[in-house]
Length: 144
Image (cartoon, rainbow, N blue to C red):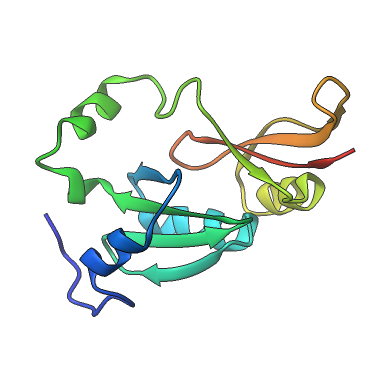
């Protein structure tokens, strides 16, 4: 159920038609907290923000974070509520995103640092694993 009455930065069909390649939609139980993670920790650009949706751009990619209530008629919502953690087993990687800076900002904003930052010689990357407020694991990385 849509709650927002604000005018989006772009009509939804136009935005949908503008997308290509691979994008990600995430569900959030606490969209204001998700905004803090996206904007302040990842330092991604927020293209649109309202009580239903964040449209985010950063590190060469676009993604969206939807409030749970926007998926009230979608079967995905009930699946996320039956799992022990949303996004279990998925890493959301942001290539070219400084893991040391993100880890510091994550700690400063009360988010969980799962691992790192550390060099991963097998990957040729320096990376960190950070858990956002909805349980998604974000992996900022840069070449070593």
